Length: 477
Image: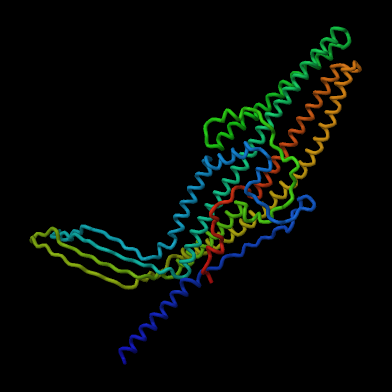
């Protein structure tokens, strides 16, 4: 009976010890800060009547109606070097995260050593095995997982940020390229019209129907038209090179030099204002990951203040490999038991480190709130720009239609000998200048559209989705 009683007491003591260690390991972890920054319930700069349900951010560029742009974005996502770099960093972070608990699992070391006796009469060859299992107490278990998960989430946000920036930059450069090519076409037409106008003015001057000053004026206008042609050509060259870099290739595709239709939204209008911007914008996801990582580092620094408790075992075997007495002996020795490392005095370094990590966590929370405010501001600005550029494009469309009618009327008058060809050329020049402004208005609206969806984090959605903060913090009290 006494033996049974002793065994029961031993089991009870072991159970109590296990429960105590479990409490120390789990419930000591610091709670995560609540991330609920103030955000507007409605978009101030959204058009009237826009509803707040979420929108699909995965294929927003397809609204521009350009199959070549769609193919370019697919190529860029596969070949861009920044995206490839971010993907490798994410793989590295995931590998580390999968082994976040490894420091708190039993580990075994084997080693050999040649120990020379101090009196130089013998030399020993030692073979040993050491095993150590440090218990993850005082929240170290969950804190290490938080730090690793925050690192992985940050890498995932960086990858998504690279994708978002890539899609936006490819779209911008393609829009600018096609717009510059269209501008070059119109400026060439203006130059040709200026040449014809100069010829007609010179004829009038020879007939004494126009003063020489009119010829000089027409020559100056022609020179300005020729100079204006250099600006779109510079834009074309820059866009070609930037597109090549984004595609991960040293030279632009020759096919890009062939002018094509200008991408434009047409009748598209913003009908839904995405309310789930906080989940899609990479900068906000990265700031949230920094909060999780900082919380994990704070927990680890706090756990480091307390004793490190673990279990250890050792087995060593030695043999005398060189002795003056030609006697070779060997023996083994083993040990097993608890290991307790108690920090006694370190001038407050561990406590200071914990306080510093606490301030870093607070800084990460402030950075998260700033990222949210910045995201809201960028989305509001882009939304307002998009609406204003739509109004500008509509006005320029009406202006070009009116000038088309005016040019047709001037041609008709010239055919009826009620007007001169000089009037026709001046009308053509004015019409083409209005078309230039319309091209700029279309490009401005397209670029505002790109800016809006970049601000909203629009890009191909990552698969599989990164774990959320709540999942990473599972098990915390």
